[in-house]
Image 1 (tube, rainbow, N blue to C red):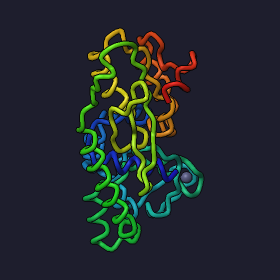
Image 2 (cartoon, rainbow, N blue to C red):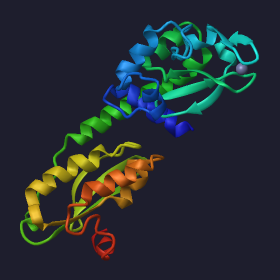
Image 3 (cartoon, helix red, strand yellow):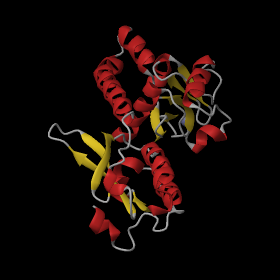
Length: 253
Ligand SMILES: [Zn+2]
């Protein structure tokens, strides 16, 4: 699941509130990634089945009661991977033993300094993702334009993605086929749809007929099916919703 890992790392870099997988909450753990990370680190790894820091796991000894396996965390298999955590399994019986939050930049650096080859290999990607995320945030600060062409009549918006000549993916917002905003696209992040729709609603009121997010769906929702219904709800109050059922899509796209 390389994309899930990538997005987890992005989340770590940003430190903003994130959705945690259900298992995390089921274990009564923290509600934000930042809290979760510090929680995990504070715990004694021996307090099974609490989480262990990702890299420290490798040298910690684990015991599985089932068929009395004892061994190093580096021998554990992957039980399941979520965007924020990875669950580790007993290599002997496959039972879930513990979990780790994906390491942040500092933890990865510390592990690399201590000679961990995996951490050394991951650092460059970490840095380039960090740089890109900072650019995403910069481009998000640009306003949604209000061209005079939109002062009267119906307004139909389409959120889409385009690739530039350098291979960068951008999220573009068009209204009646005029581009009114552009920012770097971020994987599995519906925030832009919410942020863009609010001022459009305010500005155009009833004249805003539809907001079609479907051309950008692959980026906005990624692997998260629940985001589709979230986006559906977001535009449900518009007269034409996402505007895809009445053939507006073709005209505006
Ligand atoms: Zn076992």
